[in-house]
Figure 1 (cartoon, rainbow, N blue to C red):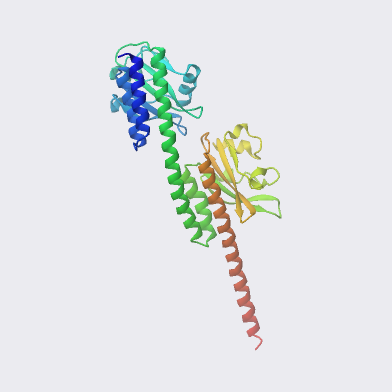
Figure 2: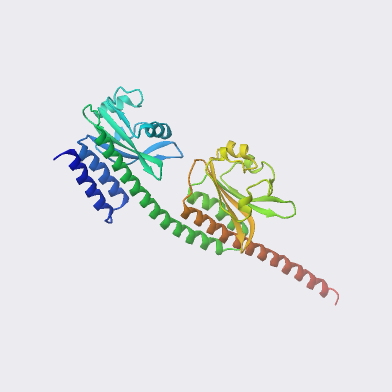
Amino acid sequence: MTKRNNFFKTFCKISKAFGTTLGKKKLLDLIVRSAIDTMEAKAACLFLADEEKDMFVPMAQKGLSDNYLHASPLKAQKTVDEMLKEGYLSFYDATTDSRLENLEAKKAEGIASILSVPVMVKEKAIGVLSLYTAEHRDFSKDEIDFLSALADQGGIAIEQSQLFERINQNSMLFLDLASSINSTLDIRKVLHILTAEIAEALGMKGVLIRLLNHETGNLDLVASYGLSEEFQNKGPVSIQKSIAQALNGETVIIEQVSKDNRLQYKEEILKEGVISMLCVPIKAREEVIGVMSLFSSASRKYPEDVIILVNALAHTGGLAIQNASMYLSLQEDKKSLEEDIWSYRSWF
């Protein structure tokens, strides 16, 4: 049987598996196994990029020892950038090629040649699929195309699984946080949930909440989490110089702070180690009363389901803030009324 027929049979098997109830791990394991069996290789590993650490994290592998997998990994962005130029990276002698790290570890592992291709999702490289052989080998175009197609299948499996996991997690997160927000009239607890708990749940560097001050024309800081005192005290945030779209009720996504000119304190934000931001309006019914800003130390895209979740939480928080403020006002009015009543009694 020709290699082309083997490639075709492998894709039929993987396509059939996608129509089953196999989970992400089993699908990725199938892809790695198929690469080894079809291409008669020693081992294979599928890595995902960890954007926070700029490293590759192994998600599925076969044929490699634990000692080898725990060797120091390559820098993610550098490797992906080089790979995207040609669509792949090929190393005939993996024990001497200066482009590679950990040469001694590869020699000890019995690796001769390596073929690596990017795992693409919506034109973005999210990882790498690498094939390892025990003998030195020049990889043909058909082999490179086959491994690239397998990597694409891995990207589809990862994307579908992550979407399902996010929807499920977001639903539970909203239920949990919304219940907590609506269970208290303590404004400090409400603000804590909207900052600390949201930052932790979504893996953000920090969260700030600023409320609109109509008298000064500024956005006053009322709560924060994960950000330095120096950054919080950088100066007044003007509603004229800040992100106008958020104050108009729109969501603002900033994927690269360094390239965006809408920010009033861009240099201070960059100094804080912030790469990307998500800003959503805080509404009390139909009125915008402030802005909730989420800060990330990595360049990241914000999926539609995450944006919807954050907006829903901000709106729920806005209503809770308004309710808590009204409760405090009623408490103060009650106290004043009681004081007035007692003063009247002193007349008799």
